[in-house]
Length: 320
Image: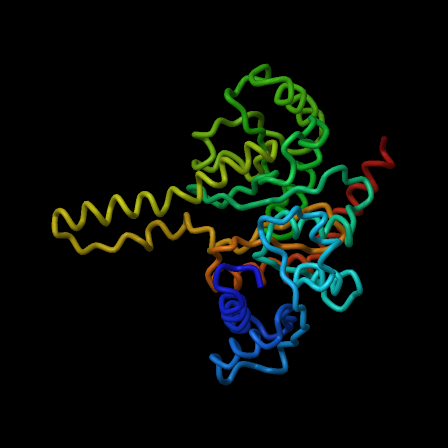
């Protein structure tokens, strides 16, 4: 019930996802009558692969997240996360209030032992393979040790879901030299350099799109600003090109060229560090984004990513 066109977009994305593989089911959590009405527009969908769980309430974006989670136990977000906690689902996907999804995951699933602050990881398009950025907005007052942990969480994600066995980790900064940046950046650089991760040093904003790293570490405030800018670039450039094509009478459609910049291609952003699989999508997600978010969730479950994170953190604690 989270997208701007809910539940039509979620349902269309779920049904499209069945074309990808035949070994998973989708539980649709929300207003049952609205869900059934939306499903009626998809005759012939595989009914045996869909279950409906009625959740009459909805958390709206303007509500304080933690209190809303407690006040609205029958909301689709809370019901959905509880299904995973109870073992009735393996992952949870939502395009609803990011704050509420995070709060429900933290309160109900709980952070994994050793995780100080779970982080949102999001894929940024580059000239090569996408770069996983952490944190994209969950934490806005990070400490150096948090940035180090984001790097460890991102490394496991890159190994399990991106197939990169030794991912390159970089720290977002205003210069390449280790001494550049504020106190947070300087201290985080020192920790990352001695972490045993494949740390390639600082990268500047202009380096990201060139594919300078596989994992980009930064505070959530900076990461969220960068993410929102990234998301605006494709439509801005397409608008300029459309206007120019109209002026010169051209009919070249360059939208496919800029498809790589479309967030819908990468699905949702995983909340890494909680004891479960939570994938956060845009409220403006089209069905394709939901379909790809389901793909991300299935891969996370199949790879055993959560157990992998737990093992890595336990081994780190044992070494200290």
